[in-house]
Amino acid sequence: MISQRLEQQMAFIIEVDKIKQIYRRNYVIGTDRHETDAEHSWHLAIMAVLLSEHVTGYPVDILKIIKMVLIHDIVEIDAGDTYCFDAQAGMDKEARERTAADRLFGLLPLDQAQEMRALWEEFEQRVSPEARLADALDRLQPLVLHYKTEGKSWRLNNIVSAQVRERNKRTKEIAAELGQLVEQIIQDSIARGYLRESK
Amino acid sequence: MISQRLEQQMAFIIEVDKIKQIYRRNYVIGTDRHETDAEHSWHLAIMAVLLSEHVTGYPVDILKIIKMVLIHDIVEIDAGDTYCFDAQAGMDKEARERTAADRLFGLLPLDQAQEMRALWEEFEQRVSPEARLADALDRLQPLVLHYKTEGKSWRLNNIVSAQVRERNKRTKEIAAELGQLVEQIIQDSIARGYLRESK
Image (cartoon, rainbow over all chains, first blue to last red; front, side, top):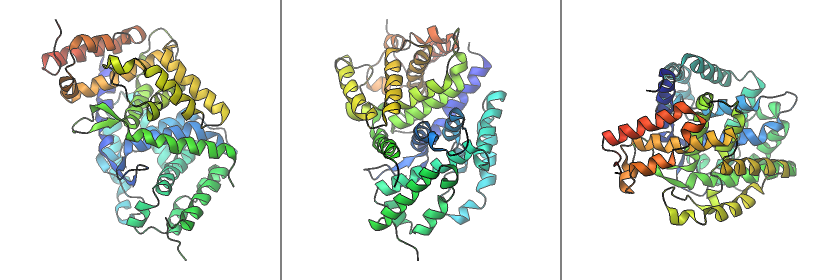
């Protein structure tokens, strides 16, 4: 018989398989299929490995950033994906996600539940350099996918450039060059007709 | 303008989006949809975070294990998914995957290309404790999904218990309790009729 500890770990690992059934607004490059939260989280983790060096002015703990991005969307298993440009749905998002975090992280052994919950809270608060980079990547990754799918999701949802700039405005504060990349993608998206410029 | 270094990093990050279009033999729990390589890699990374403590007798570098599982299937973008029970396709797998590794990791700046390539080689060789755990998780994760989808993929592909035991036989050497978990899942799968017992 396996220990209760491993049983709890496996209960969590099996439960979070459901994140593969949560579809986001953006598309996988070269397809008409929406990306799943699991795929998005994998992509963020790869970006964290490769791009954490761009954080300016602070030493960062890469392992912490990776853990954060791996678990940051798990709450959507219960709370659903809230579209980032939907102000209405955003209003009770925090309460829904906190209840989800209680249930989901609560499946784990206490020490791991506490660690994962604290990482999720830190990500949500965006206070530490690690959380600020994780948050910037969580905005940069869909920006790149929107750009590489010719702005399909932006056009379907009537998104304009001011909204995209607003959403990515803090990136330059944590990683100056990633901020330049964001602006370059926005400008090129406007020039190519993928994103409508707001006057 | 962004640096050549960031351009190379982004070229890799965009190219590996294709891993979301590589479908594996196993199903996502509760669905009739095959899992993608990106989803599988995300799940392995979560398992690495939570289960690395079960490695017996060696200190392990969790960050290294996570990086390994995040990138271990990237070569399948060029080489395709080789079904683990397909001996024929397995014969030229190594050559196809090495060529893929040259091209894909070669997109990165040299230092990161070398680091990722070395991690992939280490995973493939299975010599270090980190690589042996990553490999054990890469076998345990589909085992759990097969079990939780009532052995659908095993039945469709005429897989018997001896093949599953053979495929997971090394798990107990790197993590004794995970080895017990493997045996428990196999026995219960046979008892429930998900997996045919080989005499």
